[in-house]
Image 1 (tube, rainbow, N blue to C red):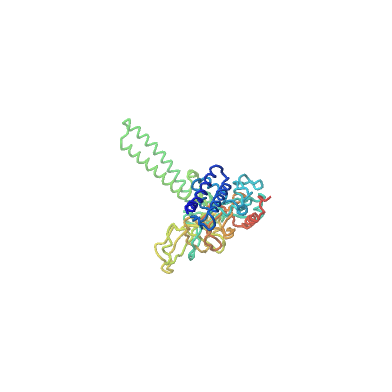
Image 2 (tube, helix red, strand yellow; image 1 turned 90 degrees about the horizontal axis):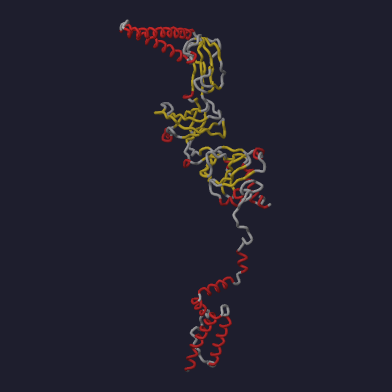
Length: 486
């Protein structure tokens, strides 16, 4: 019984001791030593005799427990062994998971020799980069030839402010009354000569017609006489001043000469101003004759002409109507229900059936103080740009009150928006043969336009015609037909 009791504890103790000594004496030779210890333990068990209990406390337990104890003793070695065990038998799995083995993960560097732009910015060489673009970012697309865009028919336009459209207001185009002049003669006479034709563009100060009038001749003669009297009065004044100083002349005579000199100067100034008011140029005041020139007060276009050579005209007769057509006004009729939307400074966009596809931006500058008693409409005036010269006085159209989305939204033609892999893009013209594929955030579509809230600027030239041709090049490169595959 005593031998059996000692053997019960000797077997596991010898096993642990043998493993510890074996790992310390020879790294990596732990398996043979452990095997020898296990064999000794088996011999001791056999000596105990058949049927004798050994009372192994580890019976039914995981016999890897000694390894756990060794791990605590040699953490570095245990980690090394664990790493080797974890990788054992996973060679096939590693080969399966590592799909990028043999691929070049270096950054994209250098210029594309075919397109002459950096490859990191080339949409045709690196179409996969499109997936990472954020609104406002883009890749470049260069065409094969400098005139390719012209031959394809690619066109670009500047975006317009996006509008939040309510019901359109009726409007009529009228001339800008701040830049409108009805020219007439202030004195009766006869049209001597007409120098400008109807529809002609004239410059400030340009002579449009000449009127022969006796009143101008009389004023010129009176001016010359007044100037002569003024010269005489000045001489008398100077003589009396000298005589007064010498005590020869009285102060009363000197004061009278001074008063006459002032009266002569006033008469000259009055006559000069009359001639200037009639339209005589300052440099022509001393000229003789009875001709009164009719001059243009500002640059503009002659929209009306009633002057005819040889025709007698009376004071106030209209001869020409001059208008500056670079800006025009639109008269709006606003219903009572929209009074709060109309105020000076509000932005508008005018469209006309005779000019399809074009919008003319403007600003309201005047709102009537009351409603029209008959129509119960509020009248307002807006000034719109007409740099193109397409708008004509009297045109009827529709005017939308504009609410800019966030102050930044712009509208482009619907054909300008390109959808690639579910993302919205536009093409921005940089050079005749170079375009940028720009990622954008698209919004509402309305009357042939689409609102862009992010991604473009008001100065960008967005491709609005034949943009699909550029998109086709992108799609071909995405299918593998890019220069990167050559």
